[in-house]
Length: 286
Image (cartoon, rainbow, N blue to C red; front, side):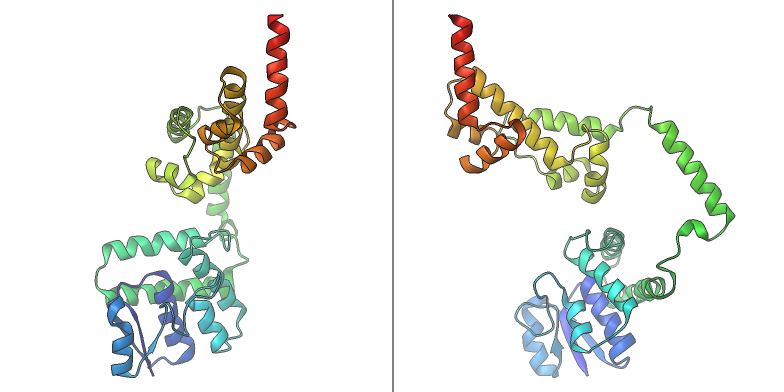
């Protein structure tokens, strides 16, 4: 049997090839061609196209082509299901599917950057997936520190370092991020986690996980919303802007969303807050 897909394979397409050769038919041929040629070449070669919009072997909802191969060929293996979750998370940027997904994405992004020959990349990728499958089948419940006394000693050193580092200053990236967020206070607060991670050259999953440690125990989204509402309160108290204008100036897409978040943060609607603020000013001036 012959299979064909897009050139320059990475996470999902290499995983599908590995699955074909290890669990479906080791002798099957795999062809990599440009996106525009896949369907034409598939017809010429009598090959089955995969990981391409509009074909049978492709993504469905939040699942990737690797998931469909497993379902289509009725591969009942808990280890494959574990690998599938990792591949799915890495290929769709949903690292919440499996904690190992971010690592798999990083590995294949680096390999694809270094290796331009598709078949050379595939051979190395086969080895990576062989290792991942062995972990998923035999080692997924074994923690690294259970491997021996040396690892346990290193873990103790690590925890000691964590305790000592609590009293140390925030890392440099946290300082830079605070400055970036402060700069946004003068605009409409449009900074996203992805933009921040790109600017800081930090993995977004790491930034999301570490953010709360240095920003009032709040997630990135919660912290930005808090600053938006604080800015909105200041504008209500100190300007004659309409609530619609204030919603725009604080980065909210529409006034209903602004009203909902404002009430959640302050316990009052913007209208009531503005009314109370005006009354307070009047009482002060009288």
